[in-house]
Amino acid sequence: MLIQTLCSLLAVNSAWAQSSTLAAYIASQSPLAKAGIVIASPSNVNPDYLYTWTRDSAVVFQTIIDQYTLGLDTTTRGEIDNYVASQVIIQQVSNPSGTITTGGLGEPKFNIDETAFTGAWGRPQRDGPALRSNALITWANYLLKENNATYVTNTLWPIIQNDLNYVSQNWNQSTFDLWEEVDSSSFFTTAIQHRSLRQGVTLANAIGKTSVVSSWTTQAENVLCFLQSFWNTAGYITANTGGGRSGKDANTVLASIHTFDAAAGCDALTFQPCSDVALSNLLTYVNSFRSVYSLNSGIANNQAVATGRYPEDSYQGGNPWYLTTLAVAEQLYDSLIVWKAQGSLQVTSRSLPFFQLFDSSVTAGTYASTTSTFTTLTTGVQNYADGFVEVVAKHTPSDGQLSEQYSKTDGSQLSAVDLTWSYAATLTAFDARAGVVPASWGAAGLTTTCNAPSGGGGGGGGGSGTVAVTFNVFATTVFGQNIYICGSVDALQNWDPNTALLLSSAGYPTWSITVNLPASTSIQYKYLNIEGSTIIWESDPNMEITTPASGTWIENDTWR
Ligand code: NOJ
Ligand code: NOJ
Image (cartoon, rainbow, N blue to C red; front, top):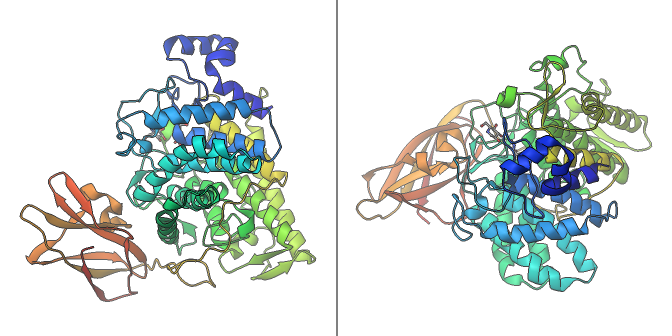
């Protein structure tokens, strides 16, 4: 049923357009969608979603490809082929973000006739190429098993390589987040980029394209390191380094489900769904909506509620979204899959508040599947997860149509009708509930030397005060050039080169600046050499410091 809805939405110019006068009107007013193009929603006014987003399209096709390759629905091969063909074209379309070689792959959306969208928009959005390559690599891995290496090498690999070279070269540049609003570094984008580079390396090795392996591996390690810096010792993942909000955001829950790898168990380094960090984060995220939607009033703390993008959201009224409410259920179903497979479940000091929802007397420890505590907790999690699906079901009209949002006061449908991503989110949540395990991507057994939230409760940083940090960098420049700094926290302008901080040249060739930075925090930064509009970044990897708990700190660097 759902997959048929998805497929009829793909073909908006044929079956869908004939099915209603509104759609016929849309088709007459707008360019026709090319084959394989995913339309975000047929809504063409308030909001106008009659475009194809790289993100939405990849999420939809990751779902369709997972369904196909896991043998759940093999009717869609033609659609997958069309998607591949459409992305070959879309990648080459020069657009306001650039050409294929100058950043055009970061363009968030295109017209449905595969031409560039040239209006103002939050660009670039660097999750798109990573999500697309993840979907295509899943497809490639399946085809290799089918002995179709020629198609993988000749058709899929060139698309994947374009995307992953882009990810490898640009992951540490600022990006608009998946909600197209905040220009900084974003957990979802970083987590997806990490997965994409790891999968890319494995595929490259499998088909003998080894020239990319060393640089992609190095960058994957850097990305994994940077990913750790989003953890906030207040018990959640801060979604964006910029934005000036609480940072509690479905961004992080979506990242966890879209990087689920059952082989990695409850690994905290990759924020697996059942990791203590991801469960603590889920609880914080869910609870942030209890008081902001009247739809949620009077619901007990251990019961599911409607959730949206982030509690401060005001877009289209700032309501709950189907896809975010379903994502909570999916993270919990993914967790149950792992706990059942490993025959035990661990409660840590970080995940204790989450597990106390289901057993107020539970304490930290490891509970084997033979214990009554395991049964109590997993039954509780299952019921809690089902509750989120029930919230969605309760606010789904009888015809099954799913828009983007449902009202925070009465649950009625709002914003874009027939949002393709809403249907994909339903399918993946149902699959996870049924115990379907998506293919592994290589999250198991990774390590990092960075300050990580994993490994026995330490690390992570995020003390309350600030410390004065002096950055001295030895850098020779020519007249007209100046040295700037930016980095991963607000005080370092969240990686935005346009607002980077100018250092003093009073001690030239040593340039200097003193900045108040959060205490006990792992912070990444780079120096920039800027002359007019020419910005030269230091080479990779990012520089990193962990600030002291108090006092001051002097950091002496040399330009690289
Ligand atoms: C349109 C984007 O699609 C949406 O995510 C955003 O919230 C609004 N613009 C407001 O900036
Ligand atoms: C707005 C959402 O915030 C964004 O994530 C999505 O890509 C577009 N709408 C299109 O669905």
